[in-house]
Image (tube, rainbow over all chains, first blue to last red; front, side, top):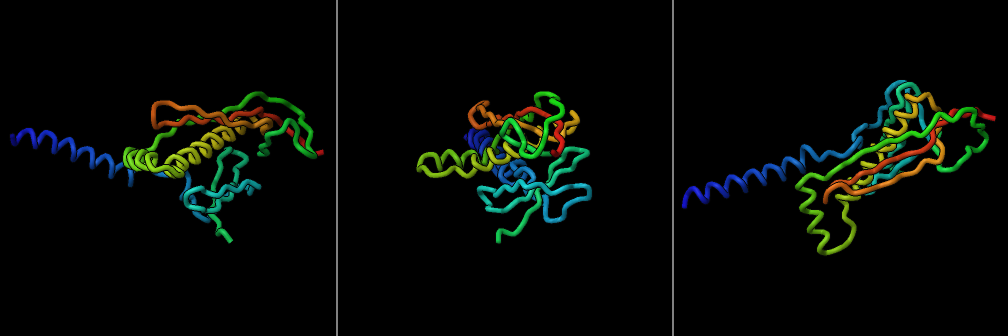
Length: 77
Length: 106
């Protein structure tokens, strides 16, 4: 009886660890923490995206040499 | 990098067409948010977990397309489009594509 409880208990524990891990560690948003400091070499574009869940206003910057894009967080007002 | 969905760019002249350019990504939600999303599916309303996933996929596809266009030597992308598909139950594929060109200001 004890080993049955242990067997399912371990599976349940693994599932809980996976859920917590995926929620807080693995499932991170893409480039939402770029912050407000734009690195050197980036040029401002006219592109603005407002995140649908956080409502944060992100101004897109572009590096002409590397082609990288930087999402600068701005105040909504 | 100028990105437009039209064939031409106002006040610019296309001097060279480099070729098609793509940016592709496949993203999934973690199991935690997936469970919450499936519960929300029962009651209705916006599934913000999947909205986030698609917004992130859109950004990543766009970033990759721009990076590829820059590597090709383009300074603009015309006729930009998005296409999307589904891989598995909780994975979403988004491709951004267009034509990489070199433009000059008129």
